[in-house]
Image (tube, rainbow, N blue to C red; front, side, top):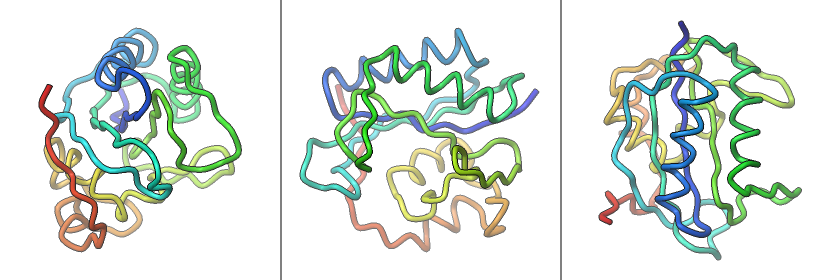
Length: 162
């Protein structure tokens, strides 16, 4: 059984409902969710001229390999109305990214694990801290806690209240 950490987020439509639906579909198609962080709200990162995002990190136990998991989450995104285009960091109903998959390091055009921006994004590190503060980044050899202390991202990440 493999352990993966995923971040779910979106800023279009019913944001919390979209995350909830994504969680249901991940459990149906990809494995068992063993931990969930709180949901956090953050201003858009990268392309800042858009609505704020809700984000949540989950720990997933799965029998899938990394590419099988990627295939499943891309299908879930489409099922939940995600429309991909060539622009990065645009508004979306749902985005599901693989942050870590065991201690694997994968660098292919279609999949990069660990996710290349983890250390740059507080909206990833703060919820990940809730679940796995001592998880070791397999490339930097630093814990999530250490990465958060070093992170220079200035965006406010606040726990979302319904």
